[in-house]
Length: 228
Ligand code: NI
Ligand code: MN
Image (cartoon, rainbow, N blue to C red):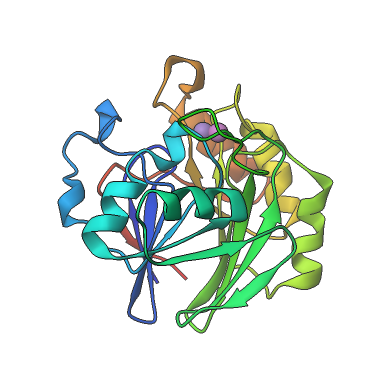
């Protein structure tokens, strides 16, 4: 499947002809200033939790593209109150077969608040299973024992997308353990370098994964990758 990185924890995958955008935070990200959000026309927008750095461009992109917002019940209801027509609420432990593949909403240990201070439900992550491959995006989270459930309930993962920047989420060593817990070799790192608290040494990070027989992929903003 085609994977495009838009900086921070925002990325798009193309699966079975559908474009699925995750956690849009572009205009307010200085590092992503070369990305024009008007060129982003997804079919779906998946939002892991209610924090600015995961949803700040979701409304504009949903309105310009008519994309379906998929998130927890509270976040989806909030977007519906803002005029979003196409939305699909989920909650933890549930899965749904969309036209591109199956989405499972997983636990995350983090927090979740909407921009106007409203409760954003509990934060989550997503496991995507499709005929073009399977992956897990954990969202912002600590390392959790729940990650060990993923190989028990979902198909073998081709890759995972994990935050690696530490401070607000898992750091390097915990994300390597997360890869072990969910039995995946390839990890695409997100949620690093955007703010002072989460700057990382890229080479050191990649060597740490390598030393455990894992691969850490760090993409440039705007870079596309064919991954399976
Ligand atoms: Ni967050
Ligand atoms: Mn975040």
